[in-house]
Image (cartoon, rainbow, N blue to C red; front, side, top):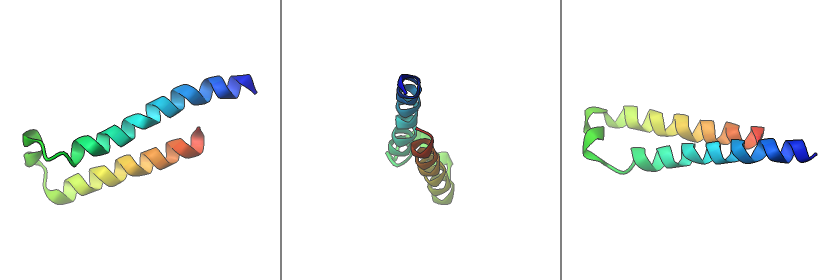
Length: 58
């Protein structure tokens, strides 16, 4: 039981990175202008789906 807790903490912390990716993608930074809005939306959805999968794993 303790092993599962020890494993789930790093997985959860890594999973937070997907939420931060979404915030970066929707920030409207200048370097993101090379992507079309559809590409940015697809990347946001990919990060959110990865976050959801990480919740299921942790």
